[in-house]
Amino acid sequence: MIQVLILYASSTGNTEEIADLIEKYLDPTVCETTMENIEMGDMDPQRLLQYDGILFGTYTYDDGDLPFETDIFCDTLRTVDLTGKVVGVFGSGDTAYDEFCAAVDLMKAEFKQQNARVIQHSVKVDLSPDEEDLQSIKKLAEEFQDLTTNSAATRKAGIF
Image (tube, rainbow, N blue to C red; front, top):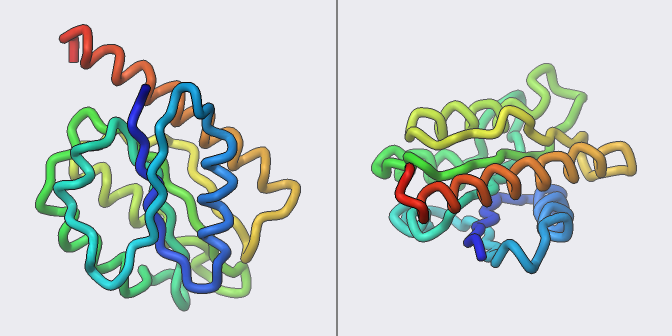
């Protein structure tokens, strides 16, 4: 059983809704999932090392900025090496702004800096998820589960 953390920041509930949908697409016979909303700086980044994979969600604040709680998380994230951890990133934003869902791309870069295996496909939702977004959410969940399962099997075999 692979250990998965779904960690997210949500102001209006949109990113939380995406997190819930991703969890539903993960196979519960393969993934043991912990879901957590990051609050103002209460996430110890060392806890990330307990998981085989991390799905991280954030909303984009204003015109492309990280929200306060995500920005604080980034400061602590820089203290941990995530080599071998699979990370998928998702988020919500508003297409009324020029920098739609820029926080998703910023977080992908942050996780790459910490040596995580970041999935290329990310989910960017305009406000709350609609029927079209479900395919993208499902794709992220499936790619994440496949990569994390393979990565965990490789580590157990002593190859990684």
